[in-house]
Amino acid sequence: MAWSDMYAAIGPAGVVLVGVACAGVYLALKSYAFLFFVWRDFRKTFPALEKDEASGECMSYDGDNPLICIVRDIVQTHANHSEDIRAEIAYLFHRNFEQLTREICYLRLISVVSPLLGLLGTILGMVTVFRTIGQNAAPDTAMLANGIWEALITTIMGLCVAIPALMAYYFLMLRFKGFHIEVVEYSYRALEFCQRRKRGKRSGEDDDV
Image (cartoon, rainbow, N blue to C red; front, side):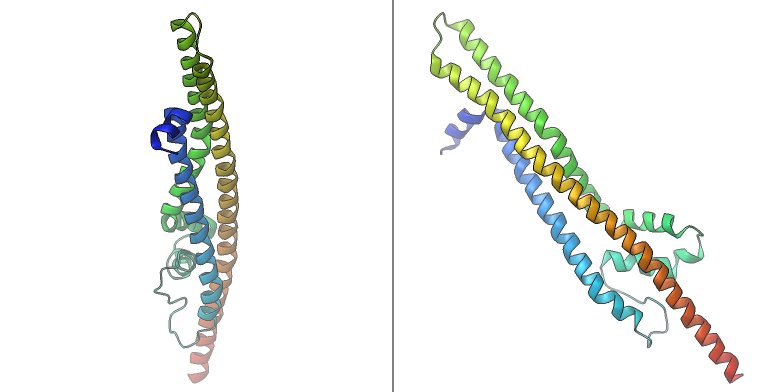
């Protein structure tokens, strides 16, 4: 189908909806892939860091996994400055996952805007129908059908974009909140691990004395 034929079939609102749908698919796949690889790397790397007794400093990590960076910052910096570790984790989540949070919000925006674009297409299609009726005493049924088609197809397109986008948004948000809970548990575990190590070093120094 040529560009002109597609534009005539779905109208300007439909063309915008196609672009919005492509953006939604891109954001959903990119966000899911990012969360998947971050979690896989976290599950693979974090146990090795816990067992690393050769390091003189707890949670010495210079990689770019945001989940491990959050636990590291909690253990090395923020745990000594705040009694509320959960609040510190929430702050670090916002700082380390700022881009992902923005992309997920865009996905939510797409789910809200798409039905409105569909409604706009419906209105434009009905305007075409009534203009044709007003300009012609005996309006061409083909022209009327094109206007009604545009009115209906954009509504369908808007819903077909909005429903998957909303489902993807809530799926990613639930997964993201699950990461938050996991990081809280791992942070407490890492803090306990480092405290045991410090107590062990102190007892060893006392024995040497």
